[in-house]
Amino acid sequence: MNKGKLLIFCTIALLLALQINAYAEDTCSKDEVVKAVDQAVAILEQDGEPGLQKVGALRFCGGNYVFVNDLKGKNLMHIKLDLIGKVLIGLKDDTGKRFFADFTEVAKSKEATKNGATYFIGSGWVDYRWPKPGNQEVFYPKTTYIRGCLMGAESVYVGAGIYTE
Image 1 (cartoon, one colour):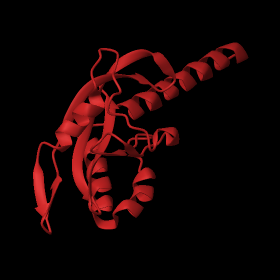
Image 2: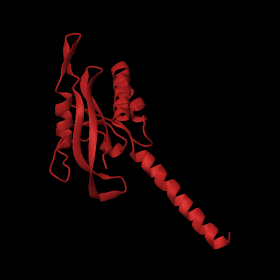
Image 3: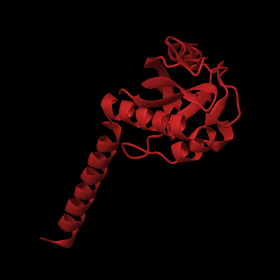
Image 4: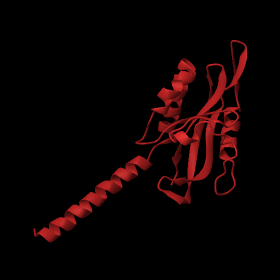
């Protein structure tokens, strides 16, 4: 095989390998998302607020992450550190959907009581649209699993999402 054909073959093989790797990272199942959120909830329920650091280090399906918000929409933990402490409840997708408000409603959809205190344990999926990393111009369908929990004495929710296309 001459050098030109070998170079073309190697280039095609590399591109296919990169495409397969990118596809593998995009094919995270809903079960894997739920498992990651459940793991984060268990940490917060056991460790309280100090558990936020452990939750911040969780990754699944490659680089996917979980986040934590209070019920007023304030972000308590996120992979993007500049979002921590910001109130996101008014954030909208390209259709005008206030998806963080929807996250809060899902978390508040079911109550529990512990030591005489009521807190929220609702869970479910919220569909919305959001840009993929590296392309802030185009919005894609995304779904996020939300689960409310008790972090110390505070009701919070944990979420994680995946793109659906």
